[in-house]
Length: 245
View (cartoon, rainbow, N blue to C red):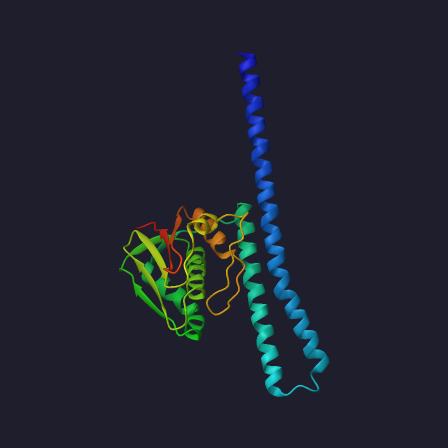
């Protein structure tokens, strides 16, 4: 009996060490991706600001406006990535405690769409909704973060003057784009920390690949799940479960 217990303990110890090693490697890869993606816009912002500062006396108003707009975009992208990293880190440390209440699904969807209105308008996209009059139980801020990330992703990969479909049957909620789509291999890697899936959008939009990883993490904290259906050239459909009243 003692020998059996010893063998069991040794096996459990080996399994634990293997799991820790795998998680450490996964986190190392993740932070390597984060460092690379944050460095790009920060260096770009530094270069632009130095160039603007050195030549401000010789530049015309149009050139100054273009430079400032580029700096604003770079700053916005960096802030978005840092917000995602912070939320993810807080979740990993167990510091996110969802405050679930009743909300009308349609109200949450309309609020998320409103926050992405400038992005969709810039590409001439139409967002089509089909949402029933129902209530769900969720944390408003976390759920809106997920919705905004899914909408941003859909807008990014939908061609100009195309459409994004947002629909629900009351049990699940889906965001569907009519964009470039993904291979089966890409969808398998989509929510993994050790895989960098960051493809430029149809108008050259850049992304860190962190948004969908954050979505999965926040939905896990909400007790919900996310799945994806996609094929090259046929767009993508992201579906999340809902906690109905």
